[in-house]
Length: 223
Length: 227
Image 1 (tube, chains in turn purple, red):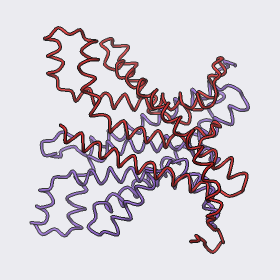
Image 2 (image 1 turned 135 degrees about the horizontal axis):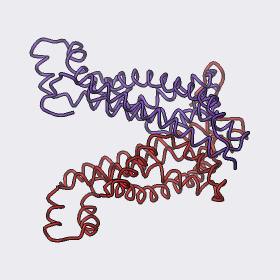
Image 3 (image 1 turned 180 degrees about the vertical axis):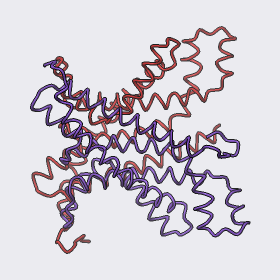
Image 4 (image 1 turned 135 degrees about the vertical axis):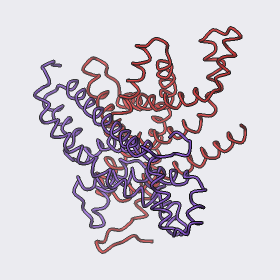
């Protein structure tokens, strides 16, 4: 055990943090897209779309992110699809969180009061216009708080990608643990770094929520 | 039925059938870890929520930050922390014990929020009645509030039980021979086939999750009807 100041550990860990941020950003982007598609699919009037969305959500929510990661990394090559670890990581993070996000999107759209939909129909809006101009803009604000949780879970899940040798924060920590034996210092720094990013993410999302709900009449319900 | 593509990858039913018993028996370790972890989380969560509600400011504030910190950091790192750091201070336990501790601690923070929601939902009149009847605070909390707070939060706790079950595969990273470790390190690397073991693990989890979630939904509906 040694208590040397941990400053020399910071540069490599920060490089790892960069990779973690890339993974998280890529994952969030994919997650938002999938959540929107699958969430809209779940409330769609077209049965096959609904089934597809349901199957996707159930599979990715019903199995572990780590199992999904191993499947993408170890099993897909059997089918001739070899993914770079980084790409496999972003794909699994996005697919996994997207399934949780889909439920958020579905819930938020269904929570928009029914009168809004009826009013849009009465005014002759097409279904597409109703969705894009009436339902989604109102749903987005109530999506943000639960989405913030989904993003934080994604950030935390990004640590898993270290086991398929993506050089993220966790991976760098493991390497330095092995050759410096300063376990306490390394893992304490790593915990604090993850926590800081999670706090930043959650603050950013509540800022966004405040911005988007500014001047909006939420029908007397305080969101 | 053969799942074959141009590359010739084939799903081998005989192999899948052969390894299934081994996977199922490893699943027992997974289930044991989950149940032990959840028992810890049920107590840990209660402890954290009591800290959080304490009138002593330092206590409630440290409760808040403990919950935030545990929830804001990856379970994997917490697992590594327990596995690699604690032994340096003379606290050496088996990988399984370490894993259960980490799972229990991590989910304590989620359970604390579940308890909080349950306690907040108990009507304020109950507290006031207890005060009027001169109940001491401790007795009010344990014999009056908590018994009313718990039944409505059973479904939410069930969801976290399923989540913990899925997260328990992380224990494979610290060499607990649960189901994923068995699939990848025991069967996969031995036989150079990952398709069947890893797919079977996924399917097993899917089956358990779907059944549990359906059960939780029924319970939820049942509780709603009772109200």
